[in-house]
Length: 217
Image: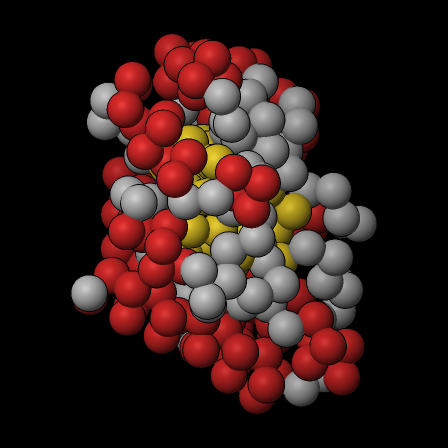
């Protein structure tokens, strides 16, 4: 398990968390390797999939000799958080704010990013000890919501997720996002279904390029 400070640096420096949802367990390792080779340093395997803990452990082993960080997403409760941490997850992401999930992660020194949409949720997450805030679903409120939250709350590190694409990623960074979470825009499900890892890598690289371009403006 990678130290929390290092995990945070890699997420923020890389600017994107790739959300791997529903990837077949026989494909998860080559997909993860293709994503990393495309420049993605933070990989989130969702805990609502089949054998998610085993997938996290397998990807963690595959990328152990790299600077990639492997985490778990869609973590809804503390027992699930404990399970993915035991499997080697270096960060935990939730679509909502659950103080028990945050406390479990803090107890093990694992970075945690609970979901928050309202100021109340954001404050609850921060007071519980969240490291980052996942603004979800970002497409519902748009980039301007980052400033709406940061205005009254001050210096909060927000990772918008849900509906972030190559076309709008610059808007989210301009609004103050420290990183973004992306699923379909960076993970090519059609290419995965075809077993085309070259295309998986190309799609991911295109999104990484868009992130780098957005942050260099």
